[in-house]
Image (cartoon, rainbow, N blue to C red; front, side):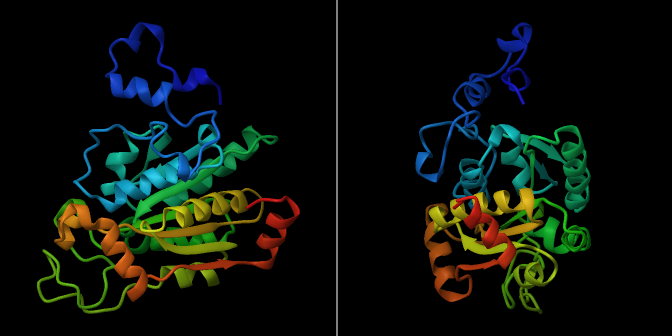
Amino acid sequence: MSNKIITPVEEFADLLPDEYKELINKGPFFKTKGIEDLGTFKEIIDEHPHCAGCGVALGVRLTAAALPSPEDTLIIGTPGCSFFGLSQAALNYSTTAFGNQNAVASGLKRMLTIRYPEQNKDVVVLVGDGGIADIGLDLTLHSWFRREKITTIMVDNEVYGNTGGQESGMSTQGKVLNMAPKGKLFPKLPVFDMAKISGCAYAVRVTVASPQKVGRAVRKAILIAREIGPTYVQIYTPCPTNLKFPPNQTVKIAKEAEKDYYAYEEFITAEAQDYLDKNNLK
C-alpha cells in the first residue's frame, strides 16, 4: 500500500471534515505504534457514534493500536455496534452481510496472497458476539477447520447492543436484559474452547481492563496467522447502555469479570510458539 491510497485527491480534500483529514495525517499508518502510544496518534474520530463508555469502542481503539502493519491490514466487519466505530477509524475497513465475515475474509486473504506473494497482507475479522458466535458461527468454525490464515477478533459485549438489548449466545446464563426479561436460559457459548479444538494455532481470552494484554494478544495473533494458521482473540467489551451500568464504570465492570468468569487465558500450539521463538517475535 502507498500513501496515495489513504490520501484524498486534491480536488476533494477541502470537502472532508477536519477530523477525517486528521485520521490520514495523524493516523497510525507507516509508524511503529503500540498500546502505550494511544493518545499520541488518531485512530478514530472523536465524535464517533458509540454510546458513552462503550466497551466495543475501546476494543476497537486497542486493536487499532496493536496492529503490526496497519497500512497493510484489511479489517472485515459486519453490521452491529462494531461497525459504527470501524467505519470511522483510520483502518482499511470493509463490511459484509451479517454473519458471513469469515467467509469473505478467507476469500480476500487468498486473493491478497496471490496478488502480493512477497508481502504480508493481514486480514482481520473484527466483529461482535452476534456476528461470530450466533449468526456467523458456522462460517467462523469452517474458516478455522480449513486453516485459513486470518485472525478473528470478537468484541464480546454479551448482548445485541444496537438492536434493543436482546440476549446473544455469549450472554451469561440468567442475565436479565431488555428483551430477555426472565433471564437467559442457557450458558455462555464456549467459543474460546471451540477455537482451541477447531484448528486455531493461537487463541486468547482477555478483557479491556487489561490493555497491554489485549495489545500483545492482537499482535501475536496476527503475526502467527501470517504463517501458521487461524487465530482467535476474544475481548470482553461490556455495554453500559444495555447492561445498565454508568458509562464511567466500563473498565471496573471488566475487571470484576476478570475475577469472576472472564479470567485471562492463552492457548498456543507448539508450532506457533516455535515460529515466534525462531523469528524473535513477541
